[in-house]
Image: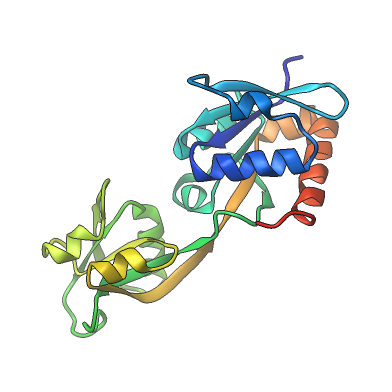
Length: 216
């Protein structure tokens, strides 16, 4: 049987995940010295080996959904947009931020009765938010710096991830309303949780214990 594979989101979540693994007592030397490799071994206390798979956030979900990876560590933002077909099994104490509705400073977004345009990288999240309010909005998908859209007159507001709010403030925008808190999550493949339950539950138990003893 192949080693358990854990898909990691590249970047900040990857670094925090390595800290979590090392707190669990796992050997992450190969992961810290990865070079251009994308599949790296992680040694366990019993000498067994897991493999870390480095990928973009949306691909982490895809690899876990299709069972080529057993676990994944990914932001709740990615799961909120498209997290169907995987188990969300553990909330992690890092990657903390929020979804928010933001617009030009000092403007009343809810004033008037015209249809509003919303620019976002997360159309599903935006649609759910406004559907709950009973509002019809025009969703415009943006791939890059979504803050540009209201500044250029493309949208009335944006739905985006907010951590400190400094980027909004620097561009004359402000949070209108918080939508949803976000943090990193551990996801699991549905079949793997049944077929490899003992191994996977042991890793989850070790993650839970490690979260209590490290500063995040």
